[in-house]
Length: 401
Image (cartoon, rainbow, N blue to C red; front, side, top):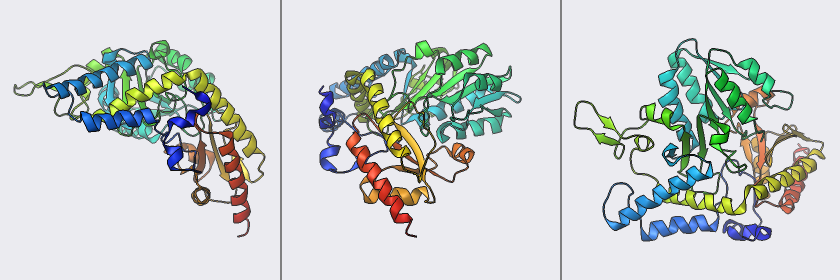
């Protein structure tokens, strides 16, 4: 792969000349190989998987199971520990509703932080409300990060679940996951990692981390929308009840005692998003060929260039000056984030504005909303220069009012 011309692998840049896409934490662009994989399935196979005995059905079924093996290898898990979901949100809800709802009780504590994405925090709210458990928040330091000492202070012998974002989608900060997991296990807690932002940026090894559950979305990794993955230690997954009931996950539904398949199939009711799963498989191969040394290095280069340039603008307030991925959250002073984002769009620059699905953190900062510029390895310093120039023009425009 020619890394010096990485953008040649994306039709997006030919179709959207001059557009600067800085919303990669929401969804990353799809490389040509992923698009080709999806199109090939839709055009030449297009059958269901796991349901039929004819040849085309076998091809689809084998392709899905090959993808499961590839996902497992990608994060150093076992094949039977990978459940396909539609996104990280569904994966996290599955964990909470199938595990937390059935294992928490009154007086138990669940450790989280204000950095958690709504897809993890909201299900935990419901779990605590139903079971009588209590949410305990880890305090952040001055850089809005979780430190080992602050984490220790939040733990107790009542802690039963620890649920944390691996890399924050707003601050771009990576937690010391391995150390926090060890401390959690020492008090008997099960650990849920929301790795939606981590999987596209760092090499994940679930065995080395020793996490109990981990979730991520495919579309932040260059795969199509509609696919994600849940990792769970097999003994935990197999002991959990199904989350969604339907075709394909049941062995016997005629007897008085309904018998379900073992994990992971018991969590995959209904028709699978076959084309999206195959796209995820190809996206993983694309990232593997790129290599995470390259991805981490490019992240650091882009972040440093962006944050240094943005720091020179007096009317910009930056909230994460020490991120681990190429993400900057900021506001233009005296300008609402939605107004600023609309102005950026007039310059063909795509940035995120609002709560970023992490409203408790926005309130923690004392803000109503934030702007977020999140970059990927295919972004360039030339695009950052355009972004900086647009920022200065936007500030000058709003100062006229």
